[in-house]
Each structure stands twice: as C-alpha cells, then as structure tokens.
Image 1 (cartoon, rainbow, N blue to C red):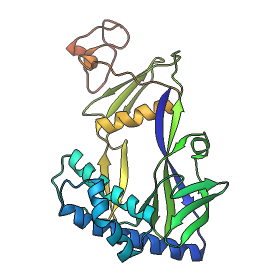
Image 2: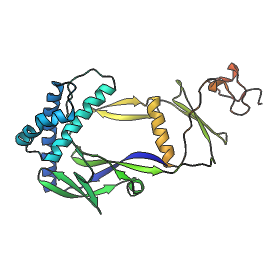
Image 3: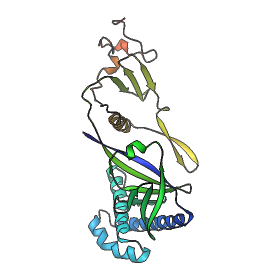
Length: 273
C-alpha cells in the first residue's frame, strides 16, 4: 500500500452573521501572524517551546485568541521560516498579507453530514459546504490533516489535505514511456505506438498576481511528483530509468545511434524500417 495526500477544496456557504464572525477571526489571525513573525525574525532559530513560553500569554491577552488558535499561529509562523530556510532563501522577515487560518482536524474543525464545524473567536460555527469533483476522494475514508481556511474574492474555502491508501498494482496491462527534455517538457510514447509532445506552454499554470497573469513553468521535480501521485490514484506506477542514450534509442528495435535523434521528424530508425 502507498500513501497519497491530495487536497480537497471545499467551498463554504456561511450566513451573513457567520461571515462577520469569519472576517473578524481571519483579520485577528492575520494580525497575530504578523506580530509573532516580527518576534521570530528578531529571534532567529527560536524553537516552538521557547516561542510558546515567550508569547503565549501576551498573545492571548492582547488579541483575545483562544489557546488552540494561539498554538496554531505559532506553528504556522515557524513553518514559514523553516520553509524559507529549507528552500535556500536568505533569512528575512515573513509578512502575512492574505486572510488564512490553519485548523487542526478534530480540534479546530470537524465534519458532520453537510456541515463543517469551525473554531472561531466567537465559538463554533456550523457552515454548509460543497465539493466539486472531489467527492470520491473526500469520502473514501482517508485521514484528514491540518486544513487552511481562506477568504478570496469575498468567498470562503477550506483546503483539507486527505491522505489515502492506494493499492499497488502487480500486473502491468499498459505501458507509457515519458521522456523529459528541453525543447519539450515531456514526450510520451505508449505500447500502442501513440506519441504525444507536451511543450512548456501547455504544461503550465496561470497565477493571478496583482491583476496580472504570469506564466509559471513546472520544474521537472514537480512534474514527476504530480505524475507519481496521479498515477497512484489510478492504480498505476511510475518507474524511473537511466536517461542515458534514451533520445538515441529506437523504441521498437533498441538500436542506439546519434542518427536516430531527429529533433524535427522524430522518425523510427532506419534499422527497424
């Protein structure tokens, strides 16, 4: 069995009164995140227990946060700085601009029927939700992780990571070879002779940034991670092979020669023909 984690994007439908409570909670959480971030920036390398000892009571008294919410804020801020360090970025102050709130499963949020129960500054809220295209994975009996409540364009979403167990497939009925390159992000060739080329323009995602769209290309590592989890969801398996001479090898006869590497036609080698 292989564990796979996907993110179920749940849309919330709060009432007008619930919106006021959510907005206030998200606003205070953002203020506390920036308050704690400023403290962590001045205490490079501080650990959770030290941070909790220094700011637990000041945060609760100044901002009126509940105990569980205070601890979640500490973990969120420390995770941001840890991510910055692991990605090789220089140590700098982290600013939180978006309205977001991390909630722990069965402590800060739970699900019962068609309602999500959320922990807020005014107590628990029971809010109707909707799933689109994620119903199967959401209801497949997986383990829920720490969710993130987001407000975007006056709408509310709860991003819930769901960990599922995927069965390993021992029998191979269909094989698809994928080659990563520079001119084309990926080229696939299956056992039925079908070839597809995926350019960097095709396999990209659009990101909205200050009313402008920018193109963000997937790195090869990210492409493989996405490929592996998509394959596991369909009970398939990704096998890595040595890329040496793969662009010069004929997929039919195995003959390896530089003449096979025709970047324009990608024809089968002459030996096979």
